[in-house]
Image (cartoon, rainbow, N blue to C red; front, side, top):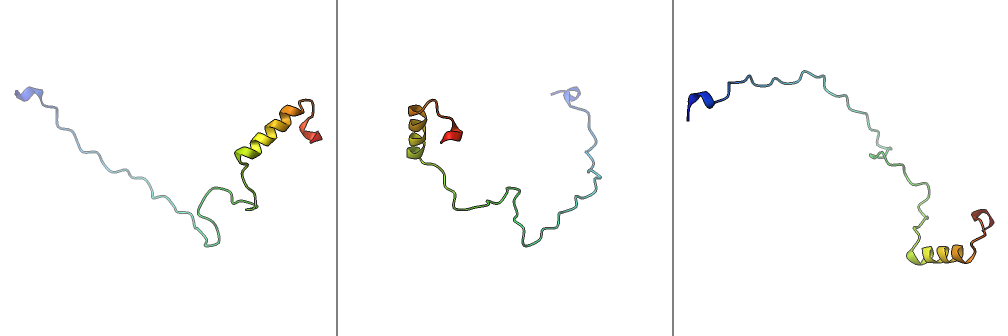
Amino acid sequence: MSLNSKCKPRDKPTACNRPPKQRKIITKDTARTSAPSPECSSRQNLTLSDWMTVYSSIDSHPNVTQANY
């Protein structure tokens, strides 16, 4: 190997001189999430049977609007 094939020596990168980030003050009575808390916990998702009932009702009454249900 010849000496000409080596790369030139480079200076090492310096550290960033940014100021440290300020942390938010977290109180104990708040949740540690950005998601909204549920208003009511008694709500359930519809099952496949429930959706089949909804669509069969819509299919059997095509001229009825949602306001008339």
